[in-house]
Amino acid sequence: VEWERLAELMAAGGVAVLSGAGLSTESGIPDYRGETGRTRKATPMTYEVFTGDAQARKRYWARSQAGWRMFAKARPNKGHEAVARLAERGIVSGIVTQNVDGLHSAAGAKGVVELHGNLDRVVCLGCAELTTRAELDDRLRKANPGFDPEVLVFNPDGDAVLSDVDIATFETVDCKKCGDGVLKPDVVFFGETVPVQRVKDSFEIVESARLLLVLGSSLSVMSGRRFVIRAVKHGIPVAIVNQGPTREDDRATVVIDAPLGQVLPRIAEDLTSSALKVEGLVA
Ligand SMILES: [Zn+2]
Image (cartoon, rainbow, N blue to C red; front, side):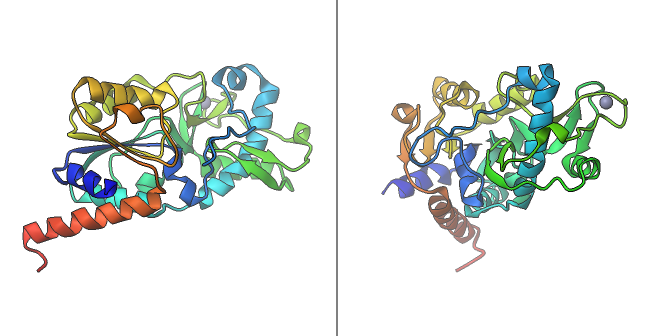
């Protein structure tokens, strides 16, 4: 069966993981594309709109203030735990994620490259000071006492659709360090470039791997797809585990269409118990 074939490919180690939103859906964070492949109505915020329009920023922070609290509650699922375990055993050599939820690290994985940043951090566009989202949450709560709308829909970028509330009255806050710098979540918005060093680090992880394992990404955007293209160019086999088809299924050696929370623990169990046998640690 397919998962056994994947376990065989992974057994030699040197597995680079590229993960997308599909890995976090089992933690309660919705994908832009549901299992049906239908695109959600919500449009992600773009860098141009965020930086160019104060009203749009106000709307974003009002919605995101509510959306972030749902994110803050999300916990790693069996898929994240399996990846962390495989990394600990040296089978997974590096992790590149498109997710901004920090759940790989929360599961115990080290040195994760967060390609699109992390919603837990806030950056000042004036002085580049990094602060925590928890601190901003506190400041926004104080600036907006009683603002507690119901979240109707929330998005993988932390944005949310709220019940009918008066967003015009929502007060945003500026950078505490430089005084008037505009604050932005430390995530890469649509239309924004991923920092060069992060891209370099990610390519390095992929190019030095024996296998590129794509988890929970439909590879519909170039930001993730380029790593598959690079692996193929270097003759590195690609395996994909995702619910639904991806743009690169044709080039992959193994494709598994199944929930990650089912496939990954099984593979981790298989590989880590056989590794123990080799080391003579268990009978
Ligand atoms: Zn500042």
